[in-house]
Length: 413
Image (cartoon, rainbow, N blue to C red):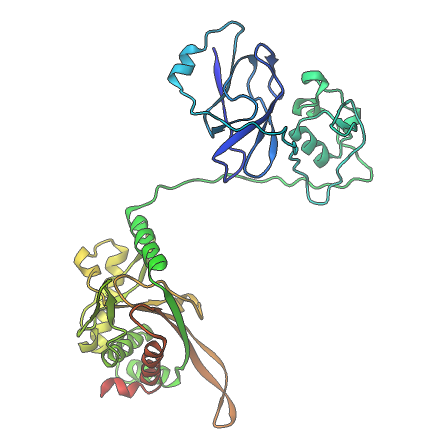
């Protein structure tokens, strides 16, 4: 039964190919491994071997013609077999290209790193410069290089004495010689997973944000010694369990009240300044990222913030968050400090004008009052939409945040 040979995808970026040369004519017999055509891709001109056997009944793309990947390149089958049915059911959107000079053919040869490439003559054919070259398929040449086989000693069984892969299957590997090659084998398995609706939403929203909002970034280092001490007092003396993230949320919320320009949204023909502070708290889940919103964060106590964030995180993992709980944010915080990340930048979460990326609190050597000591430092980076937030505005917000965290009693005033 006749079989279609389709235009192969010979590179990751290839969408169509040009037939630079045919090595078979209609009516010729084709064996598996025979050189069928030379195809010009977006990167090089490559030899294309047939994986099928039969008589070449139809050429779908003439020399110099171009066709999309997977369109009909040729049809192989039994001599005299009718292929009209295949052609009618598989229309080929081939398009001829303008007449041009004979293309220079580049044979792609994949060699092991450091492996020598033999240029010595063998049972061969002449190239355009009158020099002889080995008549062997690219795959056969690659196998020969890896195994250190001299192709001049091999008799080819392919078309015109051409050496193909099967000619090398039983050839013993030389035990010594000047060539050295290493063959590495291992799994090349990969798998694909359909994109979830959550991942599609993340890609769409953040893609729109990154490529429409002109981001700029402000980074500041904060002395966290007093915040660390305050948390220890809350935990050990008052039996109040709050995280550093809770303290950051509280400080951010109070800072936003002092800098409403950062607590804003770009609406195209106007800027909306919010009188309330609704903070989106990024929570990682197996499928991606969700951002539940802590409403009126500036009016909540540390214990209320802590309880709400823990509840969000738990229900996010259980996929029990409601849609309305992930809407209405005026500012967002992304904290990767618990993963040991010291510094990063985040993409603004629409419709916010800014997002704060929070790194890990780290111990390091610092100079205090002229003396070397161990201190706690944390790096934060503010991503701003330059359409609604200017550099000085963002810097002023960070100065207030720094003051809050370096003197946490300010949060209680």
